Amino acid sequence: MKADPHADLLDTLKARFDRHMARHEGLEWAKVQARLATHPGKLRVLQEMEHTGGEPDVVGHDPATGEFTFVDCAAESPAGRRSVCYDREGLESRKENRPADCAVDMAAAMGVEILTEAQYRDLQQLGAFDTKTSSWVQTPPAIRRLGGALFCDRRYGHVFTYHNGAQSYYAARGFRGLVKV
Image (tube, rainbow, N blue to C red; front, top):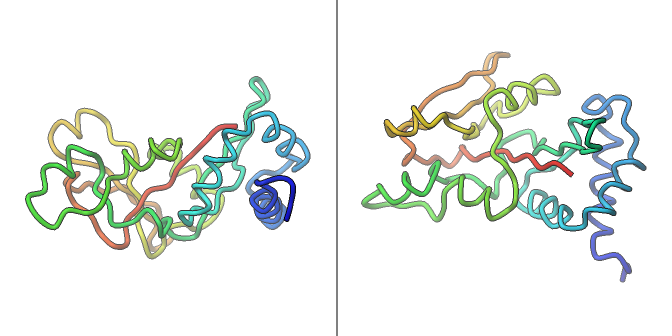
């Protein structure tokens, strides 16, 4: 048994970091690991991202704060976070066939932020994600007040943003999270 309860997670994160260097050119794993060591609470968040199929990886670094940005980099929307409405209001508005949860509540419980449309488009610069699935993205309040919610995917080599009722849910739609460490 390993002394560090997060050793397996750290091994997984390091292997992914090494395998996908184009996502974080110029960054060194030793610095990421040192930052993680000083923020052990974030390891729980990363563990939950991993557990739900997100395959988190480093996609950015802020030299001013020292923070590393981890985002779900699974090829498709994380399997453990699919078939969910956008938010609690959307979930409560369903009279029947309610899903078990909603993206906004799941993200809050995990300790992650749902990607914005801009962050989603930035992620798509690092690879082809959601070519068979789609992911909810943060929705502006003006759209949400009217009952809508936004999601994105990648088809035909392009990233698309769409709208749906916040109460909708699909087996192929989840959400991608972001956490700064």
